Length: 638
View 1 (cartoon, one colour):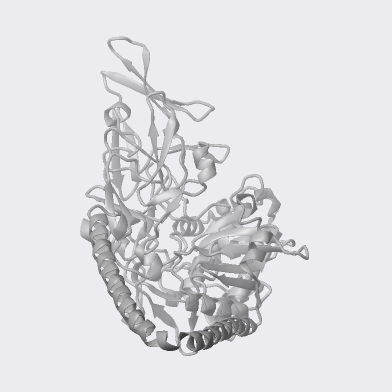
View 2: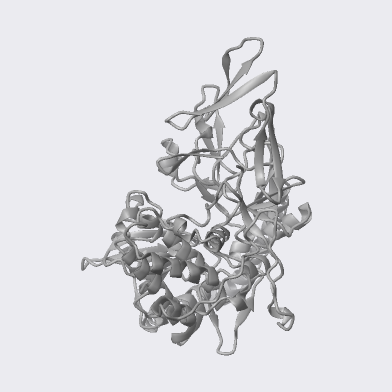
């Protein structure tokens, strides 16, 4: 159940546990007379049977408050049983992501970051503005190419919103391993009634519960787990002791050696001292000049990119001021900057714990610098100084696509013509990455927030921190480190770590559906079934109701025929099996040629909660390219 007001969430009841809604633990109060059933014909539903002892009614007030009234035979009057939200913590995402809300006796909210997290914006957090929430510190081991991540059980807490149900995982150990092996997984829960639920790395809408709560298993690096801190401290103490011992021994040896040298030199100290002093100063000068010269040579070979000094970057961004901050991605914050000539730029400051070493960073800079296309964000330069690794991009005044698609105040600015141009532009950018560039590149994190819009609303693909290059004869890769965003990841990548150009095609299909519906894929749900955006789109298309998918803001002004064709193409892009999806050159032909016939898309196995639809596959296909029946569907209580 979700309470909405003017397209903004007021409160969320939480997931259905099979017994009650996780956010409303008072089951006997609101389920009296209600029976929950789940059958093949009707799907999940409630039936109500009036009892002699009591009657109930529910009222939703204009401000979003939901009230349950009950009349008892003894009083024959309606009495308030419960209402929600009953305190500030029950309002949706009161503390922002990765934070827990604790309500005081007066109903006021108090926010605390989860263990292993710290406030994203300290100034606002200390002032009582918690909307930006918290961010990981330190990062997960998998984010910095290390092992040792584990889980911290947190009891008496409302589970976060936007969970994903993994139907193929049968038990708690399997659920734990599935989350542990996916770097994009931030927490998991497994119960006999819900099965395996996993969450991404942004945990939203959590607050303390007094009763009826299950345990949430929060993923943390080893250093943040109980018992591990003592082990780390013990190891650090031992290492420190060894280092101190070695230093003391070296000092003693140095002192003895110096004493012997002093005795030998003392006989002719005047001449020798003068000569040695002159030589030492000469050597120091030569070394210093050599370092400066090497740096200049390195700068001159910076692959035709401008290399900025850290002082210049600080001046351009007002010392990385919060007022210049445009947003924050998976690898660090992005700031608006103004260079001395007045040119506006976007400055991406990579976190020091982003997991990229100096050589990896330089390789990424070289990769992006070689990718030049009108639908890719252009890299202007970089800064590698001290511990800082900074990328300088062209500035996009309209920021990202999600700022328009999912913002009620800006949605109306995107008519269908602009949306279709954006779809075509993204496709052209992918065509360049997959086929036309000297380097075949898989982006791996294609989503609305990574599509930037220039002053003319032309789309440009950005954020290549997760991109991978392919050799000429390579078709797919396998990785143990799955990174990306739930809702956009293809099944074979999310579950088995297999990625290819068809992984980007899947993400592109999801993105088309977001552009058409104006709804976020990661928070998509419908009350009739727990459907993800692809599953719901296929069902509406299959039932000849695809026009209901169109954003109401463009429904009366768009070319319905063209929109329906785009929906059809998107469903082909989100096929479960990679070899059933079209490649990007074919997608572009489908978009530009209305007379080109389109095959019918198969129903996605990810469509239904609790019911998997087996898609027929020809037996002669190579099993090495076959991805089994996988289900990772959003689970929302109704």
